[in-house]
Image (cartoon, rainbow, N blue to C red; front, side):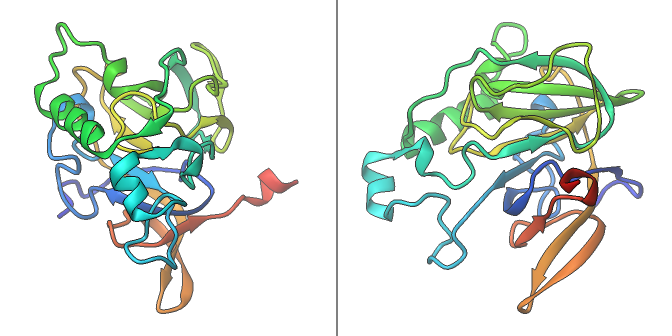
Length: 236
């Protein structure tokens, strides 16, 4: 399953409980393509674990299927996003508008089109990534956090960021089937041509048989109920 013996270790970029429906812990390429640096990318959503099918929205299934869902009815929309590492911001885009609600058929069709037919020579990266931040973590290592909520990007190009610093909020901008955070490491600051890099998260908890277990340097699967709480530094 894992093609690199030494994944790059970064901090978990969110707080609270999450599910990763697309993750390299389950399949590679995690998004079905190697384009746009997504080979080892993660998507993170919040769900209602008590409802059948673990929906990511507060409304009923018929309403979701027939009419779509306003963004504020999704559990994760507007949740804070944290820097996964110390580094320098090399890109920060925050002018791509979000739709006011999701639409299953059109969003899935758009996602498929962009995943398989995106042309880096003529297509706008923001049509896929939406509002995004790219952080230079090390030599040829860049962290990208995409689909951020319009108007919430809190950093600018050239700014130094520290691990755990709030940098934006989860949104639905760009090529997004529903509000979520898309996170990936890549070997270039240019999403259009970058190759993906495998990463693991230095610390989080996994809900297993009714108990939370601490995980170190882990790669969650698409079945895992995971959480990360605020650190002691953040709560001081």
